[in-house]
Length: 238
Image (cartoon, rainbow, N blue to C red; front, side, top):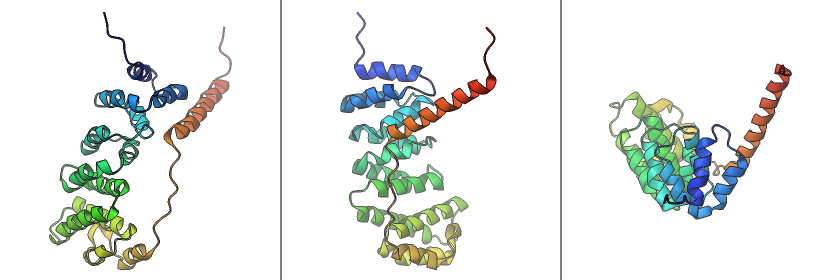
């Protein structure tokens, strides 16, 4: 006798069959399972392809954070997977993601953009931003100590790290920021710009809409667009 699928696995099977625009109600039913949905979502994630993979990542931005989600999500980042919701899914996991993200930032497997993104996410996930700043200062110093012996990609990463430390208000990074600006790494030519960021109050960014609410808006807009196209095409011949 075939083993009966769990509710989460059954709903994820529906999601995989739903194509580009699954009904919001289907996503609501998965989220309503709470922690019970997470193992099934994580099991489906490695082999999932777009658009399903994007919906699985979206679910991981609203399901309860789970330590089990950190490794597979950071692995996708480390593999250079381009998914809009991947950074949000990682940031949702909180402090458990900090060390794996710092490992990605320090490795040379990704380009400067990917490593810079890992550093930004480590700051976003940190319970103690100061500890992450210490790690990022060490990484930045290592690059600056090499002077001009950096690739263009590494220069871009220096720029990203310097701006992140300035925007977070890490005054201990001041000497490193002055060195970065003086050397012109990654286009950093204005010490005044970095000093201004250090002295500015922390940005009060508004949090994005919760993902399901955001999706409902897009789903409705897509429905209107499809209706408009059908109206423009006119009635079909019987």
